[in-house]
Length: 80
View (tube, one colour):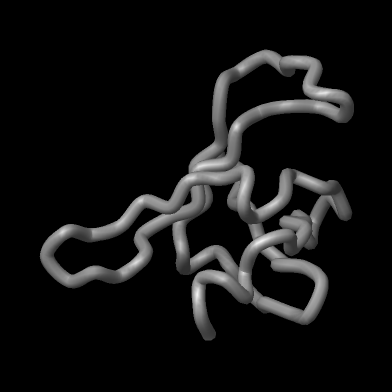
């Protein structure tokens, strides 16, 4: 899959059935040595750009369960 194909997909937490953000509005944390994606860094923003408490959420790549045509399903651990 290409990076351009990920843009615009909704990021959804499978446990809470909650929308966390949209790929393209998130940052990727990349391992400089291997070039592999380590995590998604999702800014904590509500609808209409209103800020939420907490700044950002880091989702390790291993917690991504499925990348579909419209969304990315993640399974966030309780410590996040």
